[in-house]
Image 1 (cartoon, rainbow, N blue to C red):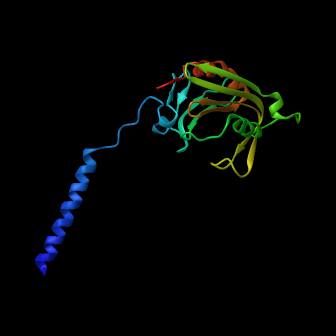
Image 2: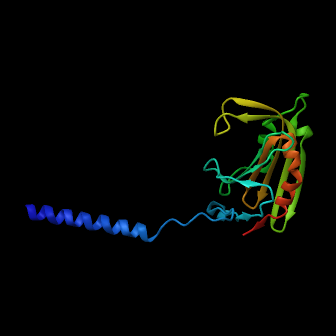
Image 3: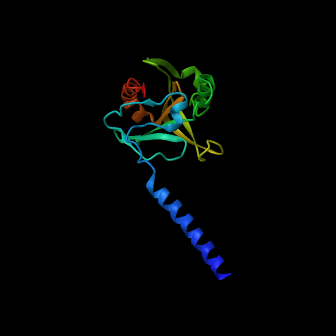
Length: 195
């Protein structure tokens, strides 16, 4: 009886030590310095060059593939650029434009869709639709963009949707800061390419 118990314990110990050494033999790969995402393989991975002056940060949630802080200017606060990818999902351009418009309120009561600037850029095999608009940004106080909104007056948003993907790029911050970095954002888009 004791011999059977000893053999059983020895077998369990052997199995555990094998599985442990197997895990140690195949460590997780180190994160890449390139802004690539395995999730992007469905529609192609869009890579880019990071403009001078942008500060790369650790993404603040699992839905972000990259994140940057763009320093404020002349006393205005910093802006934040978030890059997201949802593995072939994310909706059509019109749906995303409506979502972005709903996050910006115009002080004079006009519809944001009536004052927003839209542009389409083509970089090789990548098509990028860009929306720019200023106003009062309605920042969500919850991670999933639901619940109460905090009003951020005199803000601006540059939001872009790139195909194939789709990939999403959203720059939000005080209008003065976003306007300062607007040309830099355009040059950033000009470096988009499929990996």
